[in-house]
View 1 (cartoon, rainbow, N blue to C red):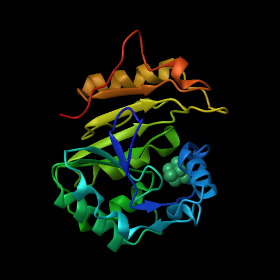
View 2: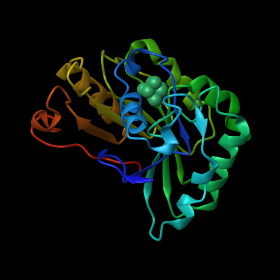
View 3: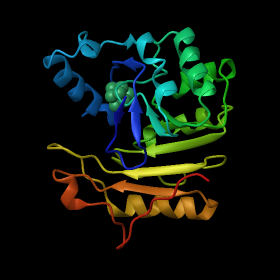
Length: 234
Ligand code: SF4
């Protein structure tokens, strides 16, 4: 568990670690870079590098937090990766079900597996389920998400590397947009962001603009048209 600098959450909780790349949004995966760093530092949890591992010893952690938290689940992995056993996903859900004082944000690129398993999971209202949608090639993930029993469904359009025009946002409760950051960051066009915001406005969906990104993300900032957009699901 760690406090997070990610603008739309408070802390991270990683009951699984490791992953592998599945689509263009993964190209400069932050989790992979961080994992290599932590492995090099000799951190036990990351001794197997970016291979998928489940960590039973992390399951008690949310019970130890004394105040309610907003928690990004698995910033260093993908809970719905095919190598994460259903039984372990159910254990993670049991923890989330048992700690309703916390709000959990689960984000996946494995939307099809999410859809296949969703009816075997208990979707208490403190669990927000999101899919990453980085360009038009992966908008099918939204359709899988829409069909799940998650009470709050969200999109993380980050790193946004192409336009996302005319999305079907039916039953979507929140949209986050952000540009890629880092030395080789792929550029995000301003009109792509405005277009998504307009789609959200038309459906009254909370819109969160996380960052422009780029080589110096602090400098490029997170204002759009002179202001910030930080809406969250009610
Ligand atoms: S799905 Fe996420 S964690 Fe996995 S490789 Fe892609 S960006 Fe990294």
